[in-house]
Length: 317
Ligand SMILES: NC(=O)c1ccc[n+]([C@@H]2O[C@H](COP(=O)([O-])OP(=O)(O)OC[C@H]3O[C@@H](n4cnc5c(N)ncnc54)[C@H](OP(=O)(O)O)[C@@H]3O)[C@@H](O)[C@H]2O)c1
View 1: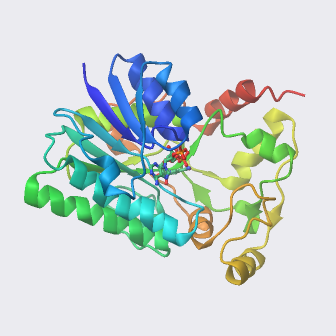
View 2: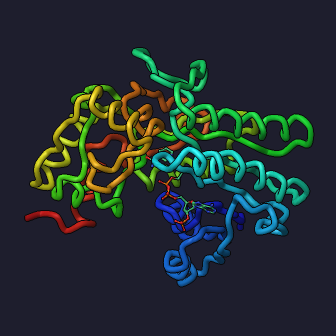
View 3: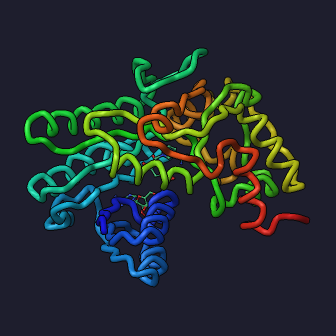
């Protein structure tokens, strides 16, 4: 049976991937920082090591021959120094730690930040990148590092750009109910989303059947504006739809404070990176994951996916 090594195994997407792979009989190991999340996973037979990707010494001897490695450590809303530490330094350290281990694949998971403001046309894997944020630039530097390692040493890197990851356990309905979630500028821009369980399916397919050097967009069938998504979720969960903050005000607050949690009552700090991501226009195609990898999505659109948030959070009032 295949073996996985997941960086960020205690995170939202990393733990869902671990559970998905365990369910398919894989041997799963990984690293994270949260002891309590690690304990939950260990009860499933997953081996979790507490380590910091920013510390090369802590990553020594991690890799085993034949491992499929998944890198799911990143920061969308953190301080820029932290974004660089986990999004670039950590990738460099992970590659160094695994360089001689004979791993089968290394799947780097990133956001759409490389596409900057996005496009009015459908984004595909062939769309040129044009980052407009530190996160976007860091993502491309990390990717370039792995491309160099692939060219020089055959490091089996492949690249996943994921849409907004949603699903049960994010406490989104709770955030709506407590008015801790706001849209920017009316939320009319389109974004592509992916249900966390479908992301796990895509990542396993990229590892097992994908090709090194390739980019794969992990998104569902139907791009949706933030306004339409949250209106639908609020309606189904019977909670208030989120209000909207004008973009100029959000920009002024970020400009003044660097990172601000004022708009979201401490929910997700809003900085330049998150601002760029949530105001971009990303209507992405999933033709490549469907046609090349044969991926079948359990939640092809947010309409089906949103239902899983309601049951999880017991939010029918
Ligand atoms: N959220 C989205 O909508 C979205 C969309 C596209 C792409 N992505 C990217 O997908 C990846 C996973 O996202 P997510 O939402 O699952 O993130 P998440 O819940 O914040 O998980 C991040 C994981 O990284 C670990 N981590 C953080 N800093 C670390 C460090 N210095 N050393 C070792 N581990 C560290 C965390 O450990 P602890 O939890 O134990 O601290 C956690 O396991 C990220 O790279 C993110 O940028 C996210």
